Image (tube, rainbow over all chains, first blue to last red; front, side, top):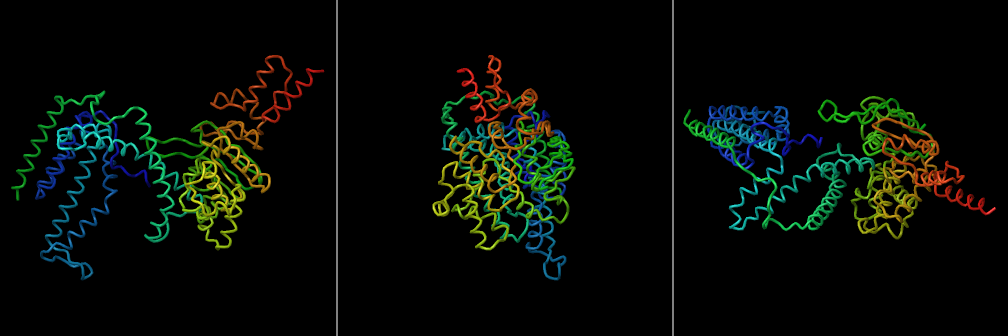
Length: 267
Length: 286
């Protein structure tokens, strides 16, 4: 149940995409998201889907992982699609139960939005699946560095993210343990309405919070004990550097972006 | 026969690259009122095995019987099984969540749907079991107690379900000597005075040597040795090969024997060691 969450998971490998500089990958993923929302017709989406599949194949990610990522938010996608289809003003095409109107513009918008959400998830999944959390935060820190002058705590933000990511599996494990302990005391997490279900979670959430705070405290002490002083004058063992591979990726992405922008005119 | 395990095999995450056989064809019977020690190296399958006994994990193959009822059959209420078989997990104080000791211990009985009077009776009894005074502690927050007291509250939370079989997973891990002695004393009392069937998972050979009637040694998901503590601890070589040890007094006896003392090597507890050494002293004087 808890083990099904794939968002933020890393899949070790040594493909072309894996080896890219994390800074390049983050920037390109960011631009990719903007592009998804710039597209305004189905031909454009065909281009994006083709490009995305190409990247997925290059990264050698099993399609199963991507499906799992989408499965996790499928209800959100359906919910948005239904709201878009029914609440957008336009010509009414049919009425469900003679009550809920589906409009032509609404259905168009619903299809666009679901496509955007799915592509968004797949695109960002490719980023997290091919980049280890450590290099991901490393990349974010370096990208934020120029903003340090205007007071953005780049190093601290990156450190917080690293720690948060590091604790996801630990806390999932802990949740599993606490749930089992409470089940052994007769707790029941599966039955009842939504309010009862939420209430049933209190015996899990309270111990979970307490343990999270305890762990945070212990970690802070352990970092202090090793003289952690924040980002000032900190050197690193692995320097990030861009090479030929990254320039190829950037060039390919620029070509893709140009096609995307041109595609706005295909109607 | 309260607990019976037949040809139990359990595979973790089957059909994935992480597939692992955690338990391999386990057969096991535990009698009423028996005290069984379950020992094994980390990852030997001890924790997986005890979770099978109250339906928290389901066997991949094989059967588990509690009071001659197969607990994996359809239509068996797991709640009633969990009421019969109580598990106190490792570091049970991490599961405390209520504002008062009373409410926390009452969590189990409340889930069983008992009346308020019955719940109060059970909480009182459970607190008495673990040696916490009802009036002094019932309104205190469990989070302001000492480590040993917290653990006893957590154990009382399981005892309040009034199980026939009590399973304890390393009940003394992480406690200071005083807390450890307190907890062990209460476990001993539950077994002796209340005739509870107890299964205790532990890393401490000295603890099981003192308490258990029978030991079961697990390695890589299989039972490798089974028998009385005295029989099991005589197989020093097998135990050491799988990363375990024997009680410290056993090593002492071996050393003394090597030095030429005529000591009985069959001792396993401190009490027996004391007797043997005093006997040796007396013999020397004569």
